Picture 1 (cartoon, helix red, strand yellow):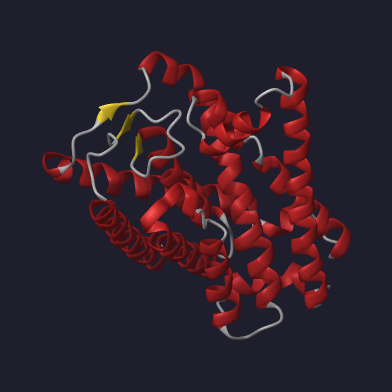
Picture 2 (cartoon, one colour; picture 1 turned 90 degrees about the vertical axis):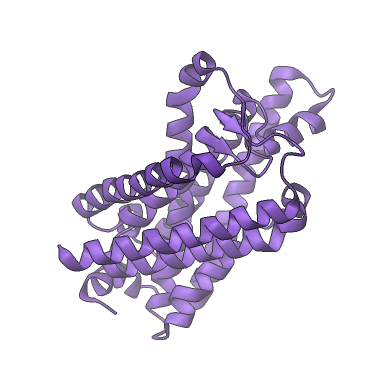
Length: 295
């Protein structure tokens, strides 16, 4: 473990018991579920009970601007669950999960810049070979919802980083010396948390693998920097691209500028796109590691 990572996990040493971690994850899940339940009640009060199940399914798909915003609005519940678990089971502050604020901010901006630059180069190179795209959201409507969407994605990605690279990675690292436990295990769980066969279809397990790979990269960069900033920045920029710019998987496209038309690509074509995205993330990881070594 690097000195930076040792400093990052130091707050978790006071109450490292595994039972606290297991109970903490249950608390996070319960608070998150309760938050979504309250949102469901609010939706019922606002629009009535008729067709509520269909509306909730539409929110889960994020297939219109408001449905997507409502879906992103579920994630403060996850962050609240982390706060409750850390505050009342480990008796430490929520901010201890982030790392030093100056490092978090600096590395967050670095992650956004690196991924944005790599994506810009790839768009220029690969655009002639890209499948046909269609406009998904009018520009004026997209701009109206953009501030809310960016804030929602910032919270969504930050909440997931708090759970997997903050709370889970810290608590496992103070109990186990092996990276298999504090680096690989949270990444596997991160991938499995995105298992949704009803939305992902034939490429479900490939998407889980791609998400797990991102989790592994994010966990490694967190260990190298001793803060969540770089992982959070990459996560944020990646989700902005996938949710607000180009939707390729047929879901969460309520505010995408462009999408691949239905039937334009086969499952095998989408599988190749996912593999290409995994290669891109490996490239981004390499660039980040080189940058960290030079500074």
